[in-house]
Length: 387
Ligand code: FEO
Image (cartoon, rainbow, N blue to C red; front, side, top):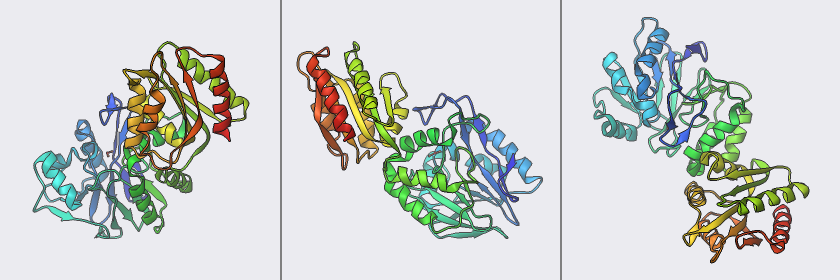
């Protein structure tokens, strides 16, 4: 249990047993479910934690309370990694009241069979809740990344409780060797990425507040150099280019497409490309690949024709990008096909609704193995991508 400010204490938990977060994301560094308590004349608890950690969370809370009783449980987000212990809390503290949005109460009934009709405060954008010295003001954050989400601003300590925004993968008792951005980016684009416009709208509201500390529901409390985190979120939520260079994504069955990719990588580097990030979609973490597709402004896609379509891992990748609102990138295509190559056409078709996407004129068309003509195409594609 640590202090965030004099009156705000961290009471969250770390999870090292989880195989897949939200049923799909690997979390090699574990996961943190954050919860906070604000101690004032009235006491507010900010969200609960995953269902496997109810007792540990309540024990953390009890220690923080030092004999006192909480008045409010603020539920900012109803996804069960944060809402699973609402009933447990309400049973333990029968005088407490739940504070949440109207949509959150509907979800509470749907998930847990109770919407606490006579023990609740329905909050919305602009609702204020005074705890004594601290005043909490609620900020609507619909679709960041569920519709019921509220963020909360404590104007006394100048703390923004940001729900899932500014969260990252990784437990808080485990050092992340790559720093904050890598796992925060993978988290953002995987989980929130589709809702850039909504996240941008919340950032604009946040820009009107004096924020000294950001308390997200996952990942560390952010209390210094906030312009760095806000700057990255501004880039991510506007689908901006974060890193100059080219990201290359491929699948390869017998190594010929892979060979073309490595030749292209060499050519790009020779021609001065500041960074070339190559990923094998069959072997690398898909969420890491998705984050890289958003990180770079230029992308090469290389795959084989398969069942008159494209190789399954590339299909999954492009479907995910399209679903997540991927846009504004320049794309180069490499296709391989032994008798009826169609991969380039299929890939282009899958991205046709991605806004502001442009395609390089040069395409590399391999008919099984690389030819001299392919080498010239690879050289031309590298030059065109860097133009
Ligand atoms: Fe961390 Fe959207 O739940």
